[in-house]
Image 1 (cartoon, rainbow, N blue to C red):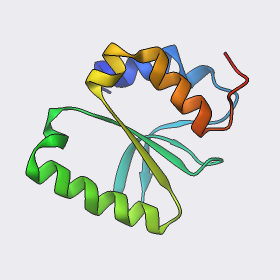
Image 2: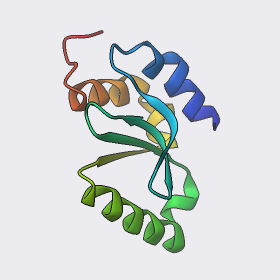
Image 3: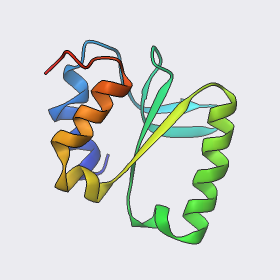
Length: 101
């Protein structure tokens, strides 16, 4: 796991009252984090995801996962580092856990 993935996992996701898996294999893809009950894949993106090749691969992968009914939410590493609380609040909302602090 990257430093940002470790922070999100240990400082937030691991304590949630829903099961979130790390490095979950779905078909022939690996998502950073996955919550099966919400059918939500969580991706933390470094700079390579914003280059043409990385962005194209992400679009293909997201489309394939969307076809399985999985929603993909992406945050840049910068988002996580600059606005950790905002990322966590957004995830709580997406997971239907808005009453949890």
